[in-house]
Length: 462
Image: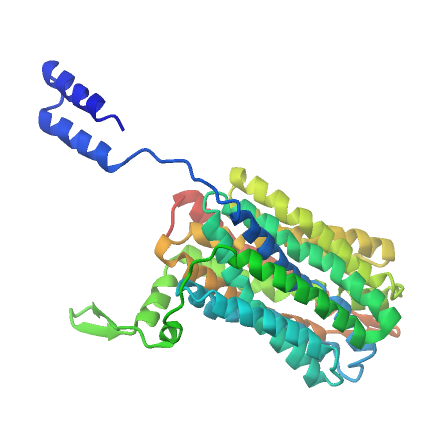
């Protein structure tokens, strides 16, 4: 900033009868207080954190996107005495813990306890997959694949996203979208690998080899995420301590004491746009995982698809979601993130209902591409929509609450859909499952029109 130029402007104003010296001094003071923004110098190591998050997506959501292959195997072999609805609790428990444990790991990141979240997270994921290879009963599978892998994923997911968001504040949406392709790529490679290893060396050793691959990815991801972290966690256990109470006035001007956390939660839920966003996300994820969990069993039991080809449907679906993550992110800058989310949810609801008319292998293959593309925006867009509806001070809390709400829906949605399965003409009928999934997602789209309208009308946070 050129101080002499400001001084010269003040003198000219006085000579020409312009603004007074006091106004000029005020203008100079404002100029001194607001220096010109300097270009951000990007640390090359920041790009490694995107790679680290990519590996986290690959080993957490990538595994979840492959669960239909496990669901099919469990129904036919290991857990054949259990109903599809009961078996689906394994996958939904994993999804639920991924969302709810993220509230804890997010708080740990805020307190600087990054290592204390990342290291146990990878240990839980690797240990869960290893113990899965020794599982022989339902509770073994639920404990290892459902609980351990789910808790581990929850400890990893939010801190890894927060690291990348912190390092790429200007283009965080693009960085997160690129890293998020790891979930789609994982959904391509894991089901194919699992089925081929299963056919050649059996269930136990197939999971042990997958565990070894995940271990290598975990080590690489850890060093990529922590390469230049300087966070300290000197008071790890203090994060669980009771926070100071805040005092406010009720309608009678009488001081009321309220716990800090409760006050934060009550404040976070204010705003009609955000409330309808949470309701819409709940119904959306009530039906979101239903086709992803049941597509392989549907293909093998209702369409008589070859057991060797059916897992490829997951790979095709996730290949479609790869484009569904990147393209909507690019378009969202022009049409708005809330509008992209609304269209994506509505499109997915229609595609799930179109599943009812799929009666051939070729049809289910094409349908998988369309379904995969619609799922992409549903994963990538909720976070920026919640950010648009939030203040800087409560953005993280609102995003965490939103995904915790979604986790409840994800926990109970697929088991309810599994309970709706019936038998018709000697084959499994998925009509109830399909209707339940499609209608749930469309109801979510109806509620999401409110935050889309709020953002369009106000263009600001609530």
